[in-house]
Length: 196
Figure 1 (cartoon, rainbow, N blue to C red):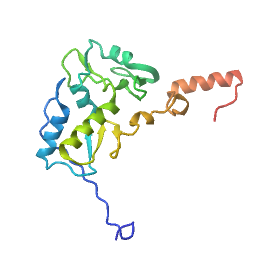
Figure 2 (figure 1 turned 30 degrees about the vertical axis):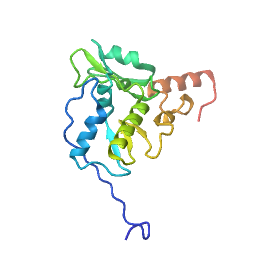
Figure 3 (figure 1 turned 60 degrees about the horizontal axis):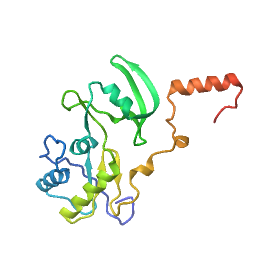
Figure 4 (figure 1 turned 180 degrees about the horizontal axis):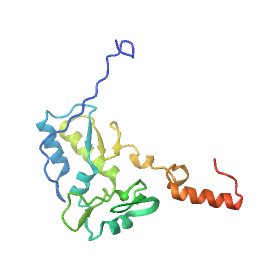
C-alpha cells in the first residue's frame, strides 16, 4: 500500500554509464554523454542527467595555467567568507565570481596537467541548457540536466540556478566564525544593539 492512496509507489534509480574517458578542451560533451547513454539503453522522458562541473569545465576549456593554485583561488574570489589554517596551508571559504559560496572558489588542481588548474564553467546555467537541448534533440525526450550543483528544470529553460544565489543580506554564511566573533565583540564594545 502506498502512502498516496491508490497512487503507485515512486522509485528512484541512479546509474552511471561507462564509456566516457578523459575529457579535453574542445570535446563535444553532448556527443560523449549521448554515446554513453546510448550504450546504457538511452534515456526516458523525465530523466535527470547529472554531469560534474569538472567535466563541463574541461570540455569548455576552463583549464588555465597557474603555477600557484592559491593565486588562482584569489583571482576567482569576490569575497572571503571564512578561513581556517591546516597543515597544508589555509582553507578559504569564499564567494566566487558566479556568486557561489564554496571552498577554494571551486578551483580544482586534481587530475589536471602539471602547472594548470581547472575553473568552474563560465556560465553553468548556459552549459546545462545547451547540454539539455542537444540531448533532448538526440533522444526525443524531455530531460533535466544537472551540472555539478547547477540545474535546469525539465519542462522549459526557466531562470536557471543563478536565481538560487542568495544576496549578501540573505546569506547565512556571509561571515565565518572568526569574523562573526570580531563583529560581535566590536558591536558589544561600542554599545550597538545585538543583531538577532
